[in-house]
Each structure stands twice: as C-alpha cells, then as structure tokens.
Length: 334
Image (cartoon, rainbow, N blue to C red; front, side, top):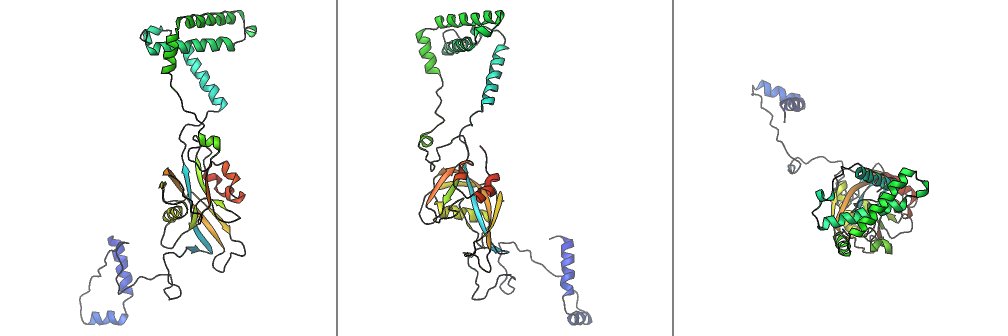
C-alpha cells in the first residue's frame, strides 16, 4: 500500500471519529495513535466480527446458492462454447493458384542453369531414374499439349526437338528403371475420407481441410440447433460456465483448450411472451472460443439428443437464420 494512499485513508478515518471523542483525547493529552491497516488478499477470509457488505439479500427467502443464475438488467447471462476442430491438411488450391504455381515452376525450370544430369545424380541411382522418368513425362506432356497448327516455324522446330528428346529418353529408360521410379515415388493419401463419402456429420475425420464447429440439438421444436451453452451461475466466470456446460451437455470424453478468458462475441435476444417474467425478459449469450484435441461427444438424450461437426457454410442448414447472422462473423471461412 503506497504512502499517499495510507495518508488519504488515515484522513478519511480520522474524519469519521466523533468530535467529542476527538476533543476528549486532546484534553487528556493522549498521544495520537498511528492507524494500522492490514492488507488482505482475495483468498483471505474476512473477520467474523466485521462482515463484508453485499448487495445480495441474506434473508431466508433469498439465500443465494451456487446454482442460481446470473441476471443483469433483466437479461439472463449465458455462456456458449464455440468448439472447433482446426484443419488437419492444407486447403485445396483454387484454379488461379494452381495455374500460378505451375507457371512459376515451369519458369524456374526454363531459366535454370544448363548442367548435366551427372552433376546432380549418381549414375544408375534411383534419383537419376526418377529424374529421367519425370523428364520424359514432362516432355511428352509438353509436346502433346502444343498444337502444331498454331505454331510458327521456330516453335514447330522446338516442339519437334522436344518430341525427339522425349522419345530418346523413353528409349534410355528400361523397364527396371520404370519400376524403381514408381516404387520410389511418394504416395499421397486421399484427401477425401470415408466419412466424407458417407456424409457422416458426427465424424471428426471429415472435411480435413476445413474448420469444423460443434453444434448440438436440444430436445425442443424451435431453435433446437445451437452451440453448447447455458446459464452462468453467480459464482462462475464465463470460461468456467462454458466448460461446465460442455461437460454437462457433451460428456467428459473430450480434451479441450479454451483460447483465453475473453468472449469472442455475444448475442442478445428476448424471450417469447410465455417465457417472460417480471425479472427476466431475455438472455445475452457470450461465446467463448475453444479447440478440441481428442475425444468425441457423448449424447445422453437429456441435455442434447444429437450433434454435428459442421463448417461455417454447412451451419446455415441447421441453426435459425437470426442465430447464424449473429455468429457468422466469429467463424472461419476455411
């Protein structure tokens, strides 16, 4: 506690002393007593003789329990969890991006220094065989894709030369070289998984190049699909409330990580007339961002009856239009 703060606090305390008591102390010649202030942290309990004041009633009819929801200005405060599975592979290139990278690759090859293949590859090695196979395929593709009817005489000569070089390389490559080149070739996994083919919306093994978001279905007719969310209790912060709701609705079989303690957005709405009361007119939902690393949702058919992992674009088919309009800017396009 700084000396300036102590001085101001001492003055404030001295001004609260009764004038009669102050004058009596001066008449008796008592020496002034230094006021001592004890520094107390939030974790230290308050003294029983001087209880802290609270704006919460402690009457028998309004005893606050740990399950009481937080209500501010007629709005029930709700915490929602925007739980996402991040992309597992790079996204597909657009046609323009594909053409650009192909052009850059060909341009780099055309302007490369003309060294012999012996400079790069050991004669008879697998790398040399693979290079010969790639060169043959490139020259064959270049000669077949070029129309001789639209070329000038010099271009025709270059094309015929490329065709001759391609056939010469094909003659040099033996069947053994072809097999070795195929065996050494890198085999890529399919970007389309079995879950994509079956359109399994519950699987985390689908849409590997996109961000997936968890939405759950509540047992009701209207506004059934939404993010996992629920009321914030008086003793909770937003992150704790979102984590508790995730566990209550989706089970504990998930490894999660919340990204910070600050919400990424909010959504406010009013209750229908049949649900309104004198103290609660609507709700304000604060969304907390989280990632899933492992595990899966467990449906208990009480809190939720179904769930789905969807992309931003797929979410339109599930949630209400006003709900999607409120949350779309929080979601990733990829």
